[in-house]
Length: 199
Image (spheres, rainbow, N blue to C red):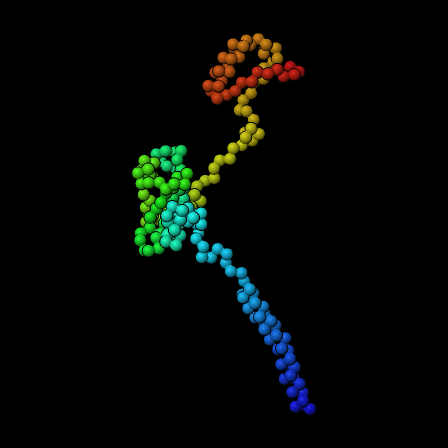
């Protein structure tokens, strides 16, 4: 009886491992199918600048012999109304990299015309430079907070006020009012003439 019991336990262990193994086989088959059915990259191996490559091919620089590394456009320094398009080109025969320029009409620009436009030869071997900020982070953290304006409501009450009876106000002429206003503006004060009801 013990032998039968041990035998059934061993089979029970094997059967419990069966779903796990079956699941692993199914997942492995699914991943293999997905990897096999994946669509190929539509742009892999293509030139990164197809319009520039097509233009240069039309000008006698075929794409199988010249690779376009970079394109840009720039306004001519000598004539701010002229825009030229630049192409950084690498020949496939191992020659040095060179730049070509075209104008907006689609013609290559000669070196004499580039000189007249003020376009100089580019230096592609510049080393990267870093400019530190004007204020370091530690200095900025140590600076006091900027003052916050209070506005008209937070400014408080005026330093001094003078209440005149209503009977005196009509006696001031326009000339006197202007003179008072002029003197008080010079001393950064303000005078307001108004008639208060009930006085």
